[in-house]
Amino acid sequence: MRSLLVIAAIVIGGFLVIHVDKAVTAKDPPAHGHSGSTAISLHTMQTYRTITVSPTTVTCGSYHRGVYPNRSKGAMGFPNGTCAVGDRLKGKDPVTITYNGMQGFVLVHAGWAMPNNNDVGTPWRPCSSAGHRAVACTGKNGLPGYNQYTVRNFSPQTARPMQITGNNVCDWNFRPAGGCYASRGNSQREGFYLTGPSKIPSTDTAQSWTAWVIWTAAPQTQFKHPHA
Amino acid sequence: MHLRGLLGTLAPAVLAGALVAVPQAAQASVGVGIQAGAVRLPGAAHPGQSVALPGVSVVNAGTRPESIRLSVQRLSKGPGGPVPRSWIQFGAPVVRLAPKHAMRVSVELVVPAGAKPGAYLSDIVATGSSAAQRSAGPASLGAAAATLLEFRVAPGTAPGFWWSVFTQTLWALLIVILLAAVLLAVRGSGIRIRMERKAAGYGTADEYGGTHA
Image (cartoon, rainbow over all chains, first blue to last red; front, side, top):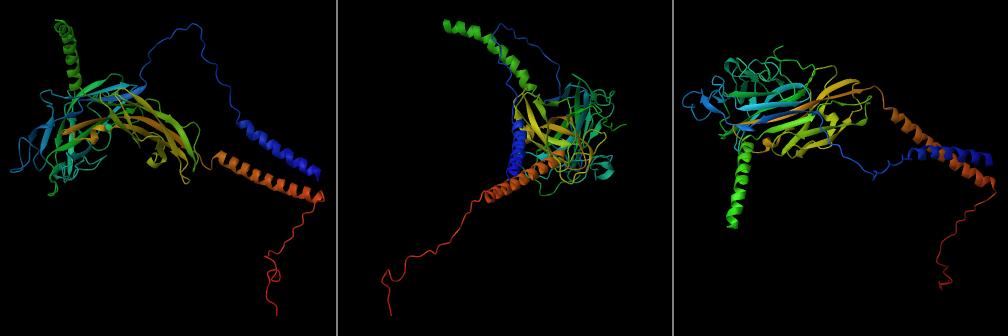
């Protein structure tokens, strides 16, 4: 009987030792010395991948298209009115995109256009005239349909504007020769053309909208170029 | 006289400050950065396991305070399936940062029990979103930055799972052995515990002068 008790005690004791041993912590590192010392200051390369866009908002002007009476030089008309940020032919590219840090790619996509100031309006969704990689435009001849819009960007180095969709794609305009490849300090000036919807709901009362264009600094992987 | 002197001294400084400030205000920028190094899980995760991934650092590279939102998207091409968004939980999905300030955000991988084993690849995307919260001009411009997110899910349960089951079973077994040993020791020692139930009562009727026939 006693031997049974002894065995049980040994087993329990051993098990406790194993578990208690896990809780033992290492010694604290030694405290800072109080002998003479010199602080050495140094800088390192930027290890972040950053993208900066300036300015933060731009105004769309040069309104064209639309059909009388829904046509104006001061506002986007219907159907498929257009406006521009900058002027490609005159070399006006008001937006500056700057990439910094480790090398990578510059991608770009458009967001929904939203009514301003809590006005009533159904968001416009970016669409693709080519009909691939994004929501296809449902209007005539590849133009934006109901509650859709398109954005095309341009830069001084490109012959024709590139359509931006709701999906991230290589910003071909950022570095036309490099397939949107970007390295430390690369920057580009860009402008846009916007084309509005063919039609919007009759219940929408908003007359001021904000369209979005977002650039993304992406890692240099096997990202497939849209023109490849 | 002293006031004139003071104004004369301060005026150039004030003008210089104004000249510096005006172009800065005109060149306001939105900027976002993220660590260049990929967020990778050393080893593999197992279905049903929650694992802390290395944290991700984000920075506000713009000139104004920014709310930076973290999300998981598949931007990069490569081997591996896309990471389902619900598998990744950020310590703070939105961080508010002053210009030129950075923050490290914790990342947790929650692999559901029915997860398919294999390699997974996506990107953690930090998007500057403060401009989205206010009424902006006709066209607003945003910035985002992405870094790779990579991990592997191995088949079967995590090794720690079976270890915990083993230790719990061992503990239960030890308790049973201990109880049995105590019981045997008590019986072997000759100690007898007699339990007797005594009727509870408030006395008899006689004591309290009950009625007799």
